[in-house]
Image (tube, rainbow over all chains, first blue to last red; front, side):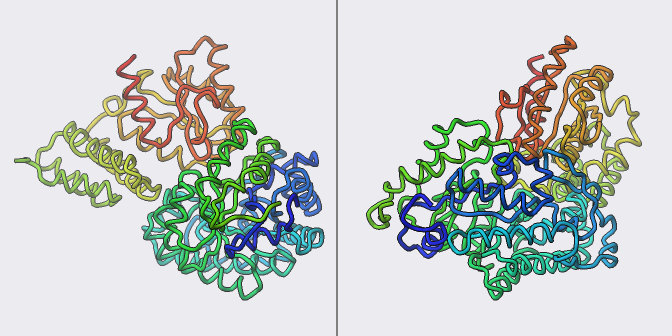
Length: 353
Length: 218
């Protein structure tokens, strides 16, 4: 789309540090796409055809380089058994954690992705999206990391206390949530997704110390990415919000190939900390609500200049673009990519679009 | 030389979140003759300052803060409360009273709980009105409780229109003197004009700084 390469080629070439016609644009657009089809958020998160239609329409209008099979952060917890509160225009949220006492985990079963909660909705959306785009554009499914699923089913405050008070019990819970992520992730790949973004907000150094990430989450992420790779996943992609400087140097140990970095981490610094790993980011998500498209374009230009000696940079937001964002602001990312990709230096000169 | 060297141990125990140890050290200090006022000033307040310094040095993480908050509250509830009547631990004046809640459309409460612990440990009277709270309830409760401040918490940006209404409702009620403070999650990316509030806190300690500065002004 809007260049000499397909989005699929553009993204994969960029990840391999090969030439591209322009910088790939991969903003995390999920519920915000629903407004383009006049669907509510409730429609979007509960109906596979509406989710897929919104994603495809958004790509037509915005011109970015990826479609996402993702409903919301509570899909896994609902499939495990948590009751959710649904509202028309906001994402559903867990009403009450299902694990009050760490022993409650014994009574829970790993959900069947083809039957439980809304996992089948997102799986069907993956399939619909892949049917629509084939191999011209990457279909990225999104799943939650083990710590973040645990935060949903236990309640974040309880999880934090139990990490210290009953660490062995938490390990058991994390083994369970890792398996939930694995089965759901594999089912999404089998349905047609090319890869996943693993979202893990609770693993952020803003929430838990680096030591907890390294000891409890990193080995689990490594196992998950390795298993997904065996299942045919094209990209091992990790998205952790907040200031992640303390953990970025360890992403390579989990075999991460693409890292989304938030606006609090300068892109150039992220590259230095990540080594060879590709970077997606890092415009402030709320700027798509409060800034004019011109200002967003200026900020995007700054990101492009900052990374002009890097081929493996994918423009995007550091976290999900809010549902109330203006579509014209998101389009400014693509316009900036078309206009300013040529600013990249000679060593990495891109082919003309 | 410090007459009570254990006070440093108490500060350290609170900072690392050792609730049981903090309580036993505080009890030992009182038995040895430390006044309750000194326990609060040289122990609890000093521990808060140490945590505050950590926050400003980007060493902040939620886990350490909630554990330290729990240790602090354990000392407050199990030691300080036994020696001081409630009227002495918290003062029911407007500039020491905060209405705290999570705005309608959001049910996340962790940030609010952290703020509640820090404010209470600092001697504020905090009235937690819960989660998914309408702007009208914030305002009614603030007026009813003679509070000087409304603390509104939200993790999510779609709640912004509701946050914006609080100040308008206060104006309608003729109570512009009640300050509105917002904080939490994605809200940190916004400005006070985006939210129509008096202050957007970047951390729990940011609220303490704001209140302290205001107190000097008011």
